[in-house]
Structure formats: C-alpha cells, structure tokens
Image (cartoon, rainbow, N blue to C red):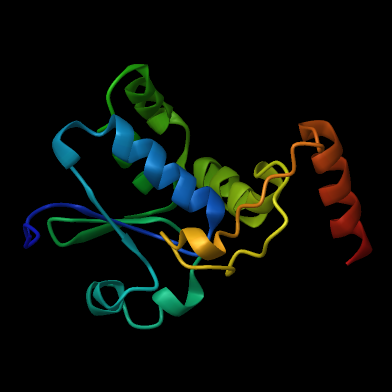
Length: 157
C-alpha cells in the first residue's frame, strides 16, 4: 500500500523501547491512522529530515505540510490527534516552549529509567523483531527497586 504524501509523518527513535511503546500507544488511540510512524533509522527519515539530524537523534519529529516540529511541540501535536481525554494535554501549550522542551530533554536523557525491569540496551534488537526484543521485563523487580538501581548505576558512571 502506497503512503499518502500529504499524510503527516512522525519520526521516532526506532531503537528506543520507550519511543516504540509510545508509538504503539498512539496507534491504538489514533482515529483512521491520522499519522504515519517512521523510525528515524529509516531511509525515508534520511531523505526528508535535515542532513545530519538523523545521526544526532535527540527528538521525536513531526513532518507536516513541509514543516518540521520537534521536542514538546511535536508531542503536543501528536497527542492532539489521539482519541479520548488525552487531547486535553494540548492545553499544556501555554507553558513556555523552553520549559516544555527542557522537560522533554530530561525525559529523553532518562528514558531507560521509565522502563521497569528493562535489561537491554537502547539499540538491542530492531523494531518489530520479536525474536530479539530488547524488552526483557523481570517480574521480580518492582518500580521503586528499578529506579533505585538505575539511579545507583548512573551515579557510578
């Protein structure tokens, strides 16, 4: 099936478990597949995004009508298209972008701490490759213990 060139595209880090979970969450709540989700590691991303941008993955990107939105701006535009009360989060747009983007960057830097029981690395496996999924959840680790271990690991490095 050919994609509609006018359809907005969300470029995301296909090697990031949190990003892939976010994409799956959106797809379930997205009416009529209003957005197309494409990994930043794809040829299409290299073709559409500015030179060098893909190699320095630091943000989700929304390509829409020839314009590129990144960081919190892209997140709010994506969330504005999902069904249900989540759309209300677009009201956060009144917060200054510099503050929103600072929060976005903090979450991006610490995204592995948001995956309870995660034992893989961000680049382990490929999106959709169930045989080598990097998400190995250990049921014996609760959220508080995982955070404590993650913080201790960061302090050692």
